[in-house]
Length: 70
Image (cartoon, rainbow, N blue to C red; front, top):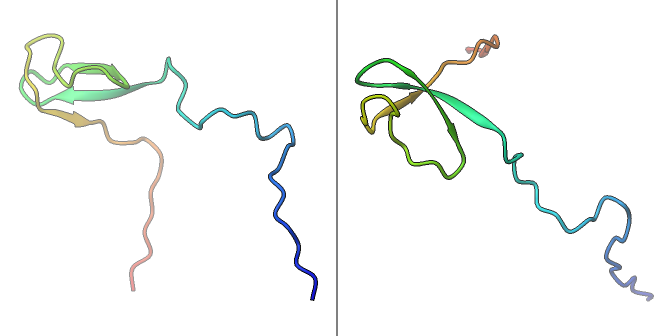
């Protein structure tokens, strides 16, 4: 019986980088108190920049989402 030995891939796809989102990627939220739109990047404190309120809601997507019911 011959056993194959695992060989780690060394192609161009294995660059040693992680799949983190780009540094400039921002997500839009809506403040729960003053209804202002707040843009946050990863690592930013979760706080409204206008009133300081700490409850933010993620804005609903504009993409059509359809679920199949049984």
